[in-house]
Length: 202
View 1 (tube, rainbow, N blue to C red):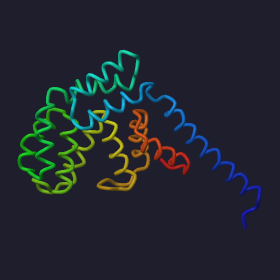
View 2 (spheres, rainbow, N blue to C red; view 1 turned 45 degrees about the vertical axis):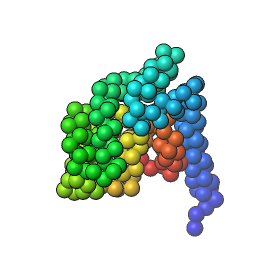
View 3 (cartoon, rainbow, N blue to C red; view 1 turned 90 degrees about the vertical axis):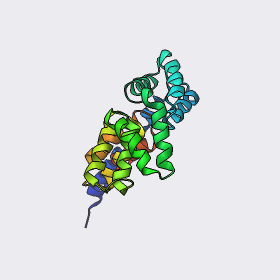
View 4 (cartoon, rainbow, N blue to C red; view 1 turned 90 degrees about the horizontal axis):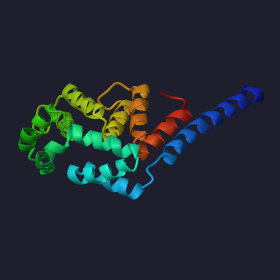
């Protein structure tokens, strides 16, 4: 039977772990962009593949000293801006289930380093859409997309590592990708990371 002294120590440790996770999340929230509305508008444009609008918004915020906006400026200029129109055409083909056309457009872009093309290609290999189902190829493209620095894709990769979707369960890898996307303002990653701190895993 557990004695009260030991039980008290465990409860105290649990509270300390919970508070550590809570303080981590609060620190992230307090470091959020000052101009949150404009930042969210820019992020929405980026996620929709409207790189030109996103770049214009993020450049304006970056001039005001917003480090997260500067991160997106570098990301867009590095991976997506030049291929904007082609990516949108490929994405539309994918959403219309025209997987053959989507593959023709998106695979060359993915090979050139376009992160969202890599992400969609990962989904296609995962589900066998227009290509033979291939988990290894799916994982390869997903990791490449996450390594390019896109927070939403990093969140997705963290989910897969945490639950073992296509990967061996790895809480440390999940925490790594969630921390990266949490620092970029992804609320779900901040929440999941806080839970990991609370539970003492990863």
